[in-house]
Length: 385
Image (tube, rainbow, N blue to C red; front, top):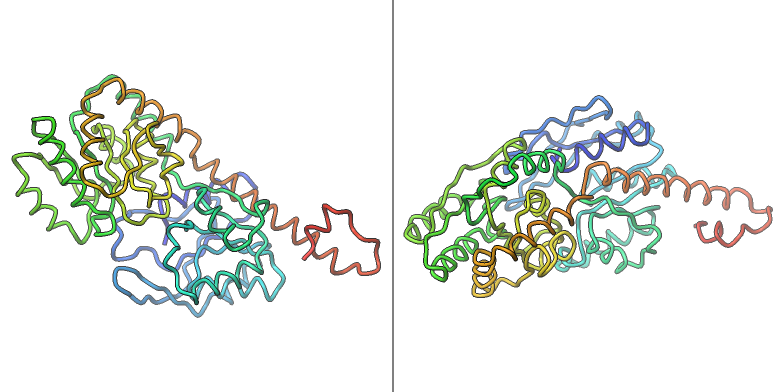
């Protein structure tokens, strides 16, 4: 489905390369997402082939029978796929059978894919062996590809990001104004995000500093009712507000109200919420399980990277709320670390991967079709498959 952190990248890719970019989506929106987003763009061709979906737990698996015909009509020079279920494998096979360069794109990391089954890994090995370039948002993605033996020169970064221009504009306009909210949590209220743990951190910090603290939850999800009950039980310690889902235009102002961003996820390949928090100067407390940890959130620079140990999180939050100079240093550093995570830079990374795939395929074709010619120089030989 169209995602707010990818649609602008594809539009920027079209503008950057002056190429025809086609985006194929399997659904306009999944039932468990609140994104209000249109994938339409003057610079991108958008397609929705007929598809159906199967819900497995909290996830949706999509199927389509019309993809091969659509790809034949588009006649792409390069095919980029972002997953490994039936439609994506259909697109990969379409490219492989027609000798069209294929580019793998994933948000996954060596940590987020630790629990994959043997079959899932074998599918990835088969796809990787027949792909020309590899794209990921993070160092964790690079480590993931390397674990399958992918050469570093074939790996490119197209990072995940928020609308930095909008967040920065709101942040600058609010410079010098008070931040009335102690803690911000943003994301789906789902067990893997540990939103209840975040409230426990707030309550423990209130105990420690001897005053009631304030907290805002941005988003919705299956734990909505449980969290409201928890908030009522902790009301003497934590003043919790639940504004619910906010659209992309309202998010920056909501973040800018806060002092500390809590991101206690047990599993997250990246976490665009960290980009959003850093963009408005929020120090971030995060687990090592988020892909953003160690990249745009660095321990003791603009936040803390901590295991899900309640006492450790309370200690870190207490220090930040008690030491204004430390808070200011981390706030400034967060803005610096996230400044280059823009849609245009993400598009550049994807464009580099596509260009590499096309050049590699051209060199490979020359190697295959000229058997009687002199051996290529070492640089070209290394590109022949």
